[in-house]
Structures are given as structure tokens and as C-alpha cells.
Image (cartoon, rainbow, N blue to C red; front, side):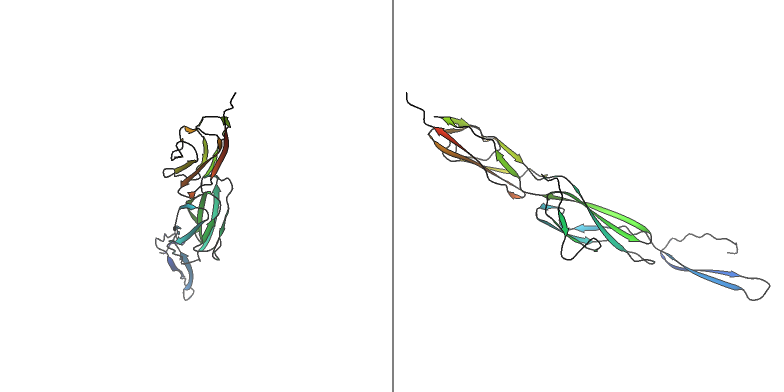
Amino acid sequence: NTATNQSHQYTNSGTYTVTLTVESKCGAPDVFTKEICIEEVNTPTFNVDNEAGCIPFNVAVTNTTSVNTVCSTARYEWQVTYAASNCETVGAWTFTNGTDKNSEEPQFLFTNAGLYTLTQKIITGCGIETNSKIIEVKKPSTVSIDPINNACDNLTINPIASIQNCTSDVSGVTYNWSFTGGNPSTATTLDPGNIVYDAPGIYEVTLQITSDCSLSNLATQTFEVFEKPVI
């Protein structure tokens, strides 16, 4: 092109040479060259081996980014942010196996339950691009039983449990009540119904539940049935 000023659009990445030739009546032409480099915007992508699990929860990243850098070197930076969930309000995690925030394929250990957002940044000559995934970290449920009052003679109780299900999936929760000396002696529902104790003694009620993070703590309550006084 013989115009003084030029504008040109490049549609493919690569290294290009621009040549300007200046001709005059004063002799041989002057030739000027400049090399320019064009590269694509790189979109980061990654996979994790598990997106949900129970503490302590290990996560390994596989970097699936298709890097096309002609003019610069790609650098990575990883960021982890926390949101309270699953019975926890404070996040706790670390990089593992010698990886760090600039690793191409980092590994993580999460020791507190909650929702963690993993953000992958790729930094090139075209700027910074990001991609994120949410990791759900769960923990075993916690259980307690409301106090049971002592009483005389035949005693009927309907124990009440307070349960913190520290997982988003409660469909598979099972209940294991034990009422030694009571009738019935076991129950497998959240509300066990009426339990009858018809003899004096000291009794213990226990409850343990199973969730997708295995067994909860064992909750207990002890009470006494007194013999009815004879007048």
C-alpha cells in the first residue's frame, strides 16, 4: 500500500514483519522493518478430581487450559475464597505436595467445612483471564438430646433430638436410637415416639446418626425412674 499511514487487522496469531520502503529521487530507497507479535486471548479451564467431600478433604487440579502464547509466557495464579456453610463459619485450607498459588496444577487440603471457590488466573501479554469452581466441604453431623426429667413409677418419654446436618444432602441420613430398659428398646426415625419405662432404675438414652460423612457423635441423656412410695 502506498498510503502514508496504514491500519491493518490481523486475524491469526503469530509473528509478522512490517516493511516500510521510502523511495525518493535522491538515490536508493530506504527500507525500514519492524516485527510485531499477535497472540490469542487464553481462556483458563481446569478440572478437579472431586467437587464435594468430607473433612479432611484433598482436592487435586488438572489444568486443561489450551495455551497459545507466541509473544509472552503464561503464568498462573490461584485464589481460594470461603463462604460459611455446613456448620462452619471459618475456612481452613492449605496447598499440599509442594504446590503453591503459582503452580500449574495445585493440590489442596481442606480441613474446615464450607464452600470454597477455586479461581484460576492465567496471566499473559493479553491480560488476565479467570475461571472458577465451587468446592463443597462437609463434615459429620452433630447431635444432642434434650434433658429428660426424673420421675416416679411408670414413665413415658418422647425424647427430642437437636441435629445439625453438616451437609447439603440429607436424603441418606439414618437414625439409631437406643433405649435400654425401655419399650421399645430401639428406634430408627428422628421422632422415636413414646418410650415406656415400667420399672425403677437409672436409664440411658443414646442417639447416633449416619450421614454421607459417616457417623455423628454419640449423644446421651441419663435419667432415673423412682419407685413409687408406699403409704
